[in-house]
Length: 398
Ligand code: LMR
Image (cartoon, rainbow, N blue to C red; front, side, top):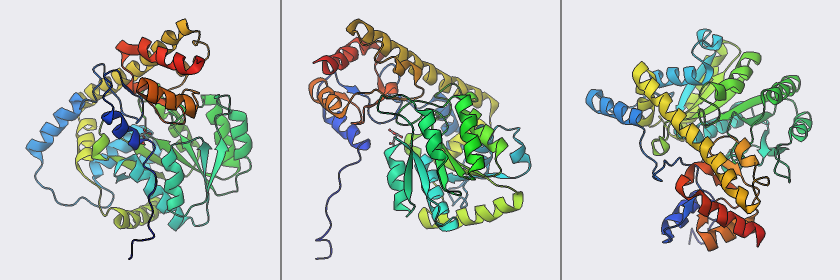
C-alpha cells in the first residue's frame, strides 16, 4: 500500500501541552505551557479594541473578494509604522515594505522561502536555545541551520560567547535575532549588547532577520522596537517578522507581516515581486480578518489609544506576576535562585528547572510547562502564587 512506510512523529511539544492541560481534571492545575496571555480570571479575552473594530467591520465591510498577494495595503502601512516608527526615513524613501502573512509563523516561513529561493546557499544562525519552530521551519525550506550560544548551562545570558560565534559566521549568512522578550528564555540583550551585535553584523556582512513577536510585552510598544529601529537606521538591508498574535490577542486569526528594508525603492520592488510569487505558492493570498481589525484599530486614534492601554495593562500584569513569583519563592529559600525570573522580559521564563523537575511538576502538581523548563509567566493565576511556589519548591528540594 502507498502509505505503509509512513510512521508517526511526536506531537508538537508546545501545542500538545494545551491538550494535556485540558484533559487534566485537577481543579488546582496551572497552565504555563503555550504562549497565550491570561487575565486575572484565567481567561484569554478578546481585547475591547478588537471587539469594537470587529463591530465596525461587520457594519462596513462590503466584500469578501481576494486581497492581493501582499495583503491589505492599509494593514501594510500601519504595521510598518508600528514596527519602524511612522517618522522613519525608510518609509518616506519607500525602502521598507510589509507583506501580510498568516501570523508570525507565516512571516518566518515566507522569509525561509525567500532565503532559499533568492539567496541560495546562505545558512541561517539561530540562538541556542530558540523557539523550536525556528529550527524545523528553516530546515524544512532546505536551509542549513546553525547556532550561536545565547544562554549558558548556568541559565545566564552569555553575550561574550554569542559575539565570539557571530564573528565566525560566514559572510552573507542570515542571523536570526529576537527583538525583545526572547522565546524561550526571556533574557534580552541590553542596548549596549545590541550595538556590539550590530558592529559584528556590519563587519561580517551578515543579513539580520529580527523576529518581533512580542512588541509591547517587554518594556513598552516603542521601547521594544528600539533594536529593530537601530538596525533599520544603521544597515541598508534587513528582514523583520512581526506578529499580531500576542499584542492584539489575535492568536487564531493568524495575522503577521514580513517587513523588508532594502537599499533602494527599486530594489524593494524587485524583492516584493519575489515575495508575492513565493506567497502565491504558499497560501495564495493571506487571510483578511485579523489584518482588517489591526488596520481599523491603528488607523483610528481613539481605538489605537484604547489598544495601547490594553497592551500596557497586559505588560504590567506580566511584570507583576514575575516579581510576585520571585517573592512567593522567598519563604522556601529560593528567592535568590529564581531571581532571574524578575529580570527576564515578556511572557516566557527559562526557569532553570530540568526536564525531570518539569515532569514531576506536571505529574505530581498539575503544573504544565515546556520540558526545557520554559514557563509562560502570563499564564499564572496571581491568587495562587503561593501554591505554585510550593510546587516548585517541592520538586527543587526533594
Ligand atoms: C509559544 O512559543 O508558546 C508561542 O509562540 C505559541 C506557538 O505557536 O508555539
